[in-house]
Structure formats: C-alpha cells, structure tokens
Length: 80
Image 1 (cartoon, helix red, strand yellow):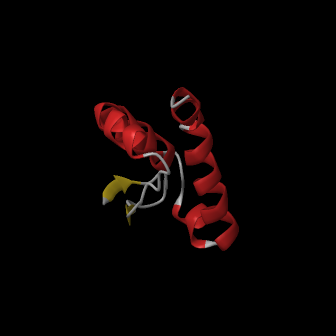
Image 2: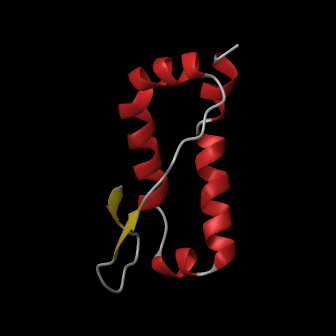
Image 3: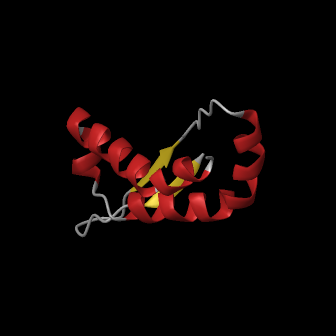
C-alpha cells in the first residue's frame, strides 16, 4: 500500500494505492526483492506528480498504470 501526497496546488490531497506485481518467473521474483526499495521509490515519484483530477478519471488510472510499467520496463528485460 502506498500513501502519497498528490500534486494538487489548491488543497492538500493524498492517495492510497495498492499495487500487485505479477511475475511469471519465480527466480526473477527472488531477484526483484533486492530492487524493491528502488521500485517503491520510483512508483511514489510517479504518483506524487499526479493530481487528484488526473487520477479520478478511468483514463488517468490507465495512464498511471502505463507510466509505472514503463518506469520499470528495464527490470523485466534483465530477467533474461
């Protein structure tokens, strides 16, 4: 579960978001544990740049998911 302040300027807003990582390779899942602090940090940075208006619409949620996947694409190519 992530709790992050959003980028709204008019008022303080925050989001609580749960993310589940689905991996095909159990070996990669073990290797990923070493990267989890960086993964968490990068996800928080992506979230903190969003406003509540961006996240309320379905399109905003879809865009957020794509940005998070793109942010961590290098991890999926490292599994070989």
